Image (cartoon, rainbow, N blue to C red; front, side):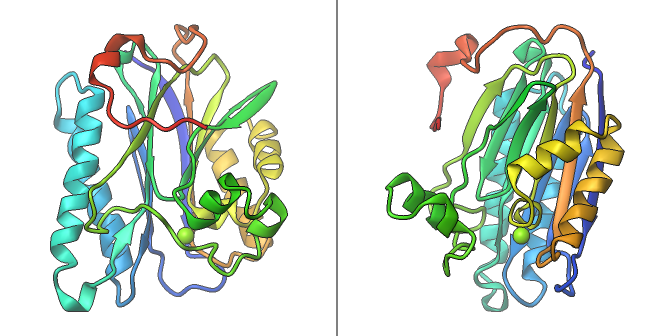
Length: 261
Ligand code: MG
């Protein structure tokens, strides 16, 4: 049995009237979804995604394939809802951490859109997911630098989302988390308000995952709270997290799209 402690918080923020973010904490599955689209469609998109992902709890001996299948099921459900003209343009991001027995204690991380997963340890951190956003593509192409990202007029434009109606590409990784390391799942309401260094500093100085989540959200609100803010902090406490590297030798044969930084 994989043991895990976690904390989670969401907040509408200081400027929005509706919280279109949603999260799921149902060990061994954790997720954050950030909906988009007017007339309450955005919060429906993220909510239906969380509802579909919650079906994970009913699966006996779940695998990576179950997680990816549920993400695709959520995508299809949103595409169907968005066929209603009043809900055109509805969609959501999703990022996931799943601690699966079949991965021998390692974690499956997956994302679509710009909600992020960081892994924070006592002596370092890394961003596991890569944003599916226009500014990320411009960064990768060398067209803009990091300093321009925060002020770019198209910084909210996503290149992938659930519900877009185009063939869904999900990025995923199998990650080793060592003892004491914590996953941080966050919507862009956190990551656009706080730098990675600020996020890591708060996580590192708050050993309790719930306290870390509370403090992260409070800091994002203090920084302006311009968007809905959602954070889930996950700390695996099982002791078998020991293998180094994020390769997945168990199933190289069944590997779908996998993008690495
Ligand atoms: Mg957002």
